[in-house]
Image 1 (cartoon, one colour):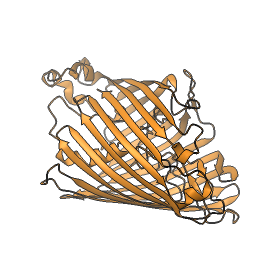
Image 2 (spheres, one colour):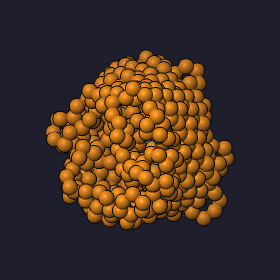
Image 3 (spheres, helix red, strand yellow):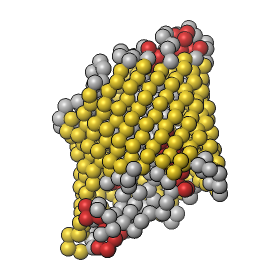
Image 4 (cartoon, one colour):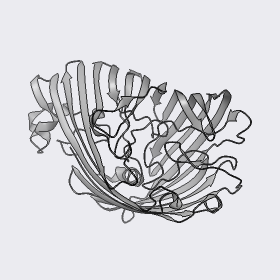
Length: 455
């Protein structure tokens, strides 16, 4: 079955910009190293000669008697430092904050004929988070993924705790950027029908605690749906229920249905990704009608020095037009990717219009850089702005201003070895008229450093 690999934030743009110029894989590099490690297929290393080409070979494929029985192991070790000045424009509980995230993600992947068992513990901790660490900062020692799977030709069934990445992770993602990724408990069925890959699933998100072995399945939220991958086209339906939802000053049960389509591809030096979603349902006794349209168009210039890739993104996400009319117009991004618009993302995909050009550069075969800017406006002046999880950051108040602000961001990433990546980013978000009218309005600044070792 086809696999889609996504990386969030500025460095995701870097990877997309330079993917066409990457060096061919060596024989020992069976798949590309990914975020969702369970999607990697190392069966090609059943050839002992290929396993001997690189030091990781004996770890990636351990034969257990025959070609159908084998074991794969691996680990991710990540250290990330983030330093903020004037977080949330000076309104955060600790606006000037600097901290370090540390996490280890080992895994074991056992294949026995048509059956498979995958286990991935997590050890995640933080240093210096103010005023206190939360569930996205640390979770101690716990189980991030643990599932069993049956594979029969074009059909696969997976049950247990698993990470889920759909499309470009607009609505369902891994939350990879923060320290503690997102997992779900439940059942997923995949089938290949001709040129289409179809997934059906019924899941509940895992809510991590900050202690050891205290992650729990959510008792309030449920996600179900169908996702079909066709050549250059994704079609999907997602159902969502939250028994304790809150939007603005209202709270109650939310049942929301999302119908979406995504057209994506590349022709020559051009690439594009266009996605639209309409949502309907019920919230707190009233109706829901919300939508979003995201556009991404890019062109690479492989013949020019540093092989630049210029991408323009434009997003429109609906907000609530009237808090008193009984209808909720705010789009719900459900479980979106972390670092949604970049390494610094103080606003999430709710009630916004944004325009975001990004330039990716290949400084050398192992060194990439990017420079991006983004401008944000409110879609509805009757609604406020939200963070990525959907928490209200600034209420609409009495302001009719639309302009939220402008962000600039630069990043550089060095693939030091096949397993080790070092990266840095610097970001600044200047407040616009809406932020100035509703509270503190200092410019947010963030500096990020990351080391990621993965095999």
